[in-house]
Length: 314
Length: 147
Image (cartoon, rainbow over all chains, first blue to last red; front, side, top):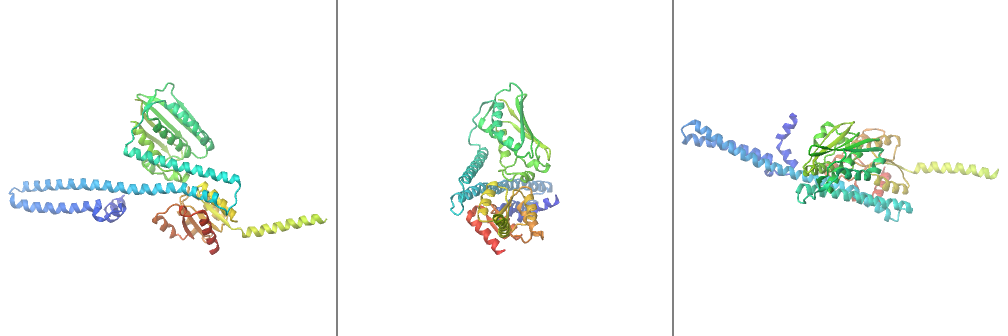
């Protein structure tokens, strides 16, 4: 903790983190403003004590001037800081994305090398195998691009939602049949229960699908060595409540506060699965909130995770 | 009597050839969690006359480096269970595996990552996406020759 505070004062290293020169660096500017404030308050004291007789008034004037300057300085540097942080996150974003794109690209490149080269003999069956590698990786890239577009849409808020009356239980049932073979391959059982006669919900179906897909996909992916995943839908007051419970690896306590952050991937998730963009839960949360809902989770490392959300019916 | 003798002779000969062949065939341990790459590079190295053993995560890779006694290790950096950075450190610290040349094969191209790895003394650092298959195979051959 004390180390953390000390590092806050190490201005040069802070500025390097943002990749800015000293004169553009918020921390340095703040320090500079502080010095100016001290100098100007001393000056105003000196000038004030010459022209104003009552020392109480002088003190008050000095305090007011100092306070105004200080407030302005902190507002300016704070906004600077936000901008610098934003630009740092953007470059980190590019780093992560370029690595995520490179992996399927390499797969494509090498598989094509193998298919087209005359140096290595191959049977028709082998060629077929390699063609399926090509398709798989093209799909992987399209999925990543889709995710990125959703993120950009969510951040800019430019594309309006296309809301319709939707039956969530039908949507979940449809998606579960798509996930059937993936779950079976992972030796997982999926159970889905819901209240009878649930009302239709007014949401954007394409966005809602992304939410369910991400949650189901995560539950399957992070449950190792077989187990059970339970999904449940019910009406609670004016909301629809959904939960998905897995018996998977769980999220460590120290990682829980970051779990919805863009590009955050828990270390114990990385241990199981290095693929994944780190965008899924960020997107999921943003969409649920966009529809006026609230998402949360409870998780225990080694025991499993339950994600749940409330969505207003109208 | 005669044909039987011939058969026995052939068996002996066969065994001799195999033993000789096994001696020549160099073994490569390929630690990589991307199945598509395991397949492509694995197939090609097989066709080039190497024996390839593959590990899909870091833990398995560490174990196999000791049990399989490979002539060369191909190492990815982002791996489940134990990362490639830690594996390389462990390989170089262990007298059993210290002398095995390690070719790092990754898509991490950041200077900081490259510097961190080069300090640990790999035989080569290749950014996957910048090389085609033939070039990677060429690098592996060269590293094995210089061993």
